[in-house]
Image (cartoon, rainbow, N blue to C red):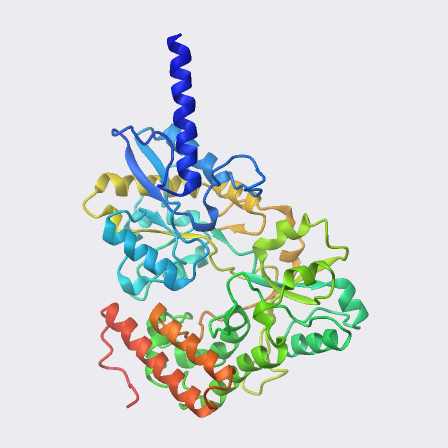
Amino acid sequence: MSCGIATLKKIVTALLAAAVVALGLIPYFGNAGNTDRIRLVVDMHGYMPSTSRTPTAEDPEVFNSTYYIAEAFMDENPDVEIVWARTKPVGGMDAEVAQWMTTQIAGGTVPAIAFSWGTRYQDRNWYLPLDEYLDEEGSWPYGGYDTWRKVFRDYLWKSGATKDALDRTVAVPITVFPGASTGYFYNKRAFARAGIDQVPVTWGQFVTAAKKLEENGYVGVAPWLYFDTTTTFDAWVFQSVMSPSYSGAIFDRLDYDGNGTVTVAEQARATLEGEFSPNGVNSALAREMYGNLKYYYKEMLKTGWASIDYNSQWLNGTVGIREEGLWALPNENSNVVRDFDYGVFVAPLVSSDTSEYLKETEFSDGPFEPGADLSLNIMKAAVEGKPEVLNAALRFLKYLTKPENISLICVENGGVLGAVKGTSHSNLIDEFIKNKFPILPKCSWPAGFTDEYGDRLNRTFERWVNGAISDEAFYSEADSIQSAGARSFLGNMNIDYSGWDIRA
């Protein structure tokens, strides 16, 4: 009878734990009552394991690979208990995630390992520098490499998504995009009927294709509406289409140290010296870029676009081009409602065919140094004064970045590649990675520098697009916001800019 009671207690405990997780009351993983174990709180954002191992009517999509990886890690490291941080607003934008992080830090509950887009909040001094752990001889315990850093794709360590403005590595990449973070899904039947015989590879070709689709009764381009339901400066069309081209055109003026990469600090310097200003030394270039963004919202999108159900229109075949993240590939491939074939093409850059200021786009066969998708930080507030938690965090990150573990994540996700060498990926992206990809310059156009000034820039841009302010008023306000954001960022990072040639 005692065995039956013990079993019943385990079942009840498991059911209660599952209920607590489902209700989002506290993060939970395993035996939280075991005080001898190091409690390691982990946030993996969109890669968090689902609370159920099998699909249910209420939760039809499950993600299991990180669950099994954590289980195997705890089997090998019985002194550590993984606790998933399930209260985070995973679908939140910058300001929401920043507020959540701030609250967790203030309450002493911030995850030791967390996702925050690599270096997004570097000016808040939240991240633990990781160079000494990555470069320590013998730091990779699984064989084949003498340091942890050497396990990864080498180019990632030059990225602003892993290194902060002080040249410190503060993020560990786990997965990378399959050549690009986003793409344009297109209706092959609509393209054929509109007489479009090849996918666009430049912005000019993209605009022409959208017009042809509209003329033939289709929605030319449908924006991604999961988050972007307002007119926003820092949207995908800026990040993927405009920013690389226009910043690349003045790359030599931005790369102050000549090392081939424009850091955020160099970007801030260039902003204060007027390089990005619509009223500065490159005013025609800047005004053209802002004008292209305005044209996208005013002319290419339908009036009332934010309230249109483009998902239904895509399924019924009336959308020609649909903006979407590559993570949608698995769902699109399993779609049984759509009755037309679809394809995906890479976001087409603005190029010399539409601008006298820009160079002709160069392409590579296959992905060119794709950026980090999932990258994880160790949060200083969670490990300072707690060497045992730091040690557990490093052990888990090293275990997570074993090629076989990242391969599990990539295959289950379906739309990403591994950030370490020797990983596998899902065959769902095989066709996409055969595309020609633009060779992007290692620089970008600023978008406010901090979440506060980024939000101000977004609001000002929306007012301009909606006709609430004139062109000149927008140029002046955008310039002021960018400069104020640069100063705020530099001040937060304690970067001395007294010797720069700053505009009055």
